[in-house]
Image 1 (cartoon, helix red, strand yellow):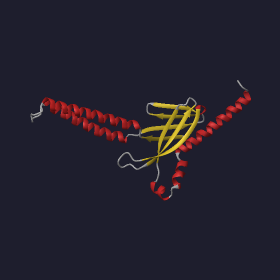
Image 2 (tube, rainbow, N blue to C red; image 1 turned 30 degrees about the vertical axis):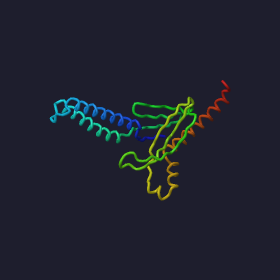
Image 3 (cartoon, rainbow, N blue to C red; image 1 turned 60 degrees about the vertical axis):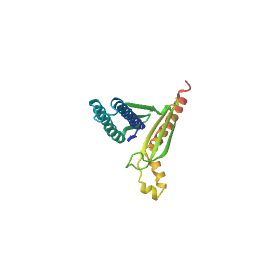
Image 4 (cartoon, rainbow, N blue to C red; image 1 turned 45 degrees about the vertical axis):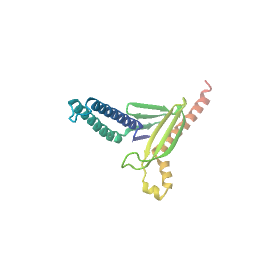
Length: 193
């Protein structure tokens, strides 16, 4: 089973916040230098013009990067084969063996639109806990027809049951049961070692 999707990371919001703080800091420094060096003179000096241009450039870069970062979505690929789940993201690959999974759960959450022009949506949250108590949490936006949900609320439950993450969860649970049965049968055949 293979799932490919893209999601918006919370890291992007953090980057935008840090950019905003840098921009405010540079603006404060520029204003302090401007007023401390020449408080009463009406004509700006070259250094004041350079500081003003630097502030303006920083502001433009902040606006452009905010727009770009709001549009960026990180690609994720999940491949579930007969004995492990492989999750690939940029610069990171996680492999989880079914025999190492202690529990797996699937939750849904309603999210309000964070970007102008975006609709409210539901997120699926797949949480896998391994035998070492390490949690792997994956989020995926569910694409829904809002008009169908408004007409028939039962449609929402059907979509939750047919979603890719719910199919993946069922597949992993089936593989975990198969491995347990196989392990018990091998133990019976080979005895306790």
